[in-house]
Length: 315
Ligand code: NDP
Image (cartoon, rainbow, N blue to C red; front, side, top):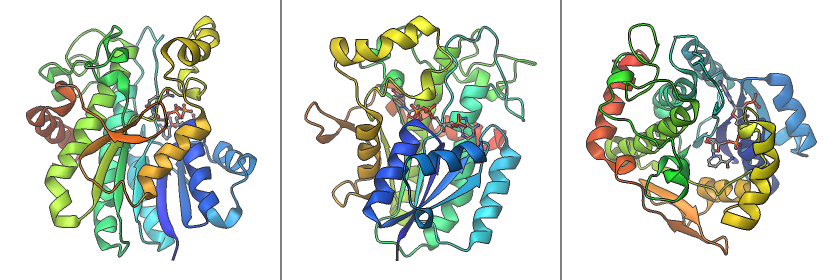
């Protein structure tokens, strides 16, 4: 049978390019988990993904009710789940004031981390039941959360601090909307959310890999300077960022190439190692990359896990 893969945020950028790369192999059925149904349907058509290779399902990660509803709807499809790709994200670098999810969490961490955390936890039993040979959960990370890199050292740097803001619920009413308890900074909130993504992947690995055989992995696909992720940035930035990445940092990667990379992490038989963070070198060869001190801090990962469980209503 075909493998069944759920990709969140498959309506544009990396998620769409990955859906397309997997569909082209003829070996996958892609469940495109998207907040905008019509946009996703149009994107799939425009990308030339054949009708029999995908299903669009509604998922708004900025609402935990929507996450639960998505899981129920997925169960109704009656399909096994073999691979889950947590790809969707928002990035709000120019926001002066925080925005919030339906439950009142700051939007970047609420969407990128907490929504995916609940989704993955709720789908884990489905994955356990699948008879697929190489089951995988992939949480897309980023270089920007890794302060051991040049890109990760551009201020504001990621820093989860002692997690006091996260413990307080990130709602800005009785505390701070930032994980570390500081003042709101949209660019930092995104980077912090990516650190949570990478910590969560490792904590899943520690808790579930041996028991379930599921591979848990993260990756940095390269700088895909053309995606919608930068839609909230100032126009001058959007004009100069792609050529800057192409010619100066040389970290630029096309959406198509990035999609192939993520598709590799989904299906390549040689990328089954669990608990790792993949990157690619200049020749587009994959290698296991080093995470920053904070993004590989096991104690912090456990704390983020426990606080997140409470916030999403699992504990
Ligand atoms: P895009 O903005 O193109 O894609 C993000 C996707 O997430 C969109 O499909 C968007 O939906 C979806 N999304 C946003 N909010 C929600 C929500 N509440 N519920 C459901 N879906 C939502 O950006 P990219 O393709 O660049 O980003 C994909 C991933 O790659 C992210 O995890 C990002 O952190 C990561 N990444 C990107 C890099 C880059 O250089 N671009 C570098 C490193 C990592 P909609 O189409 O409706 O807007």
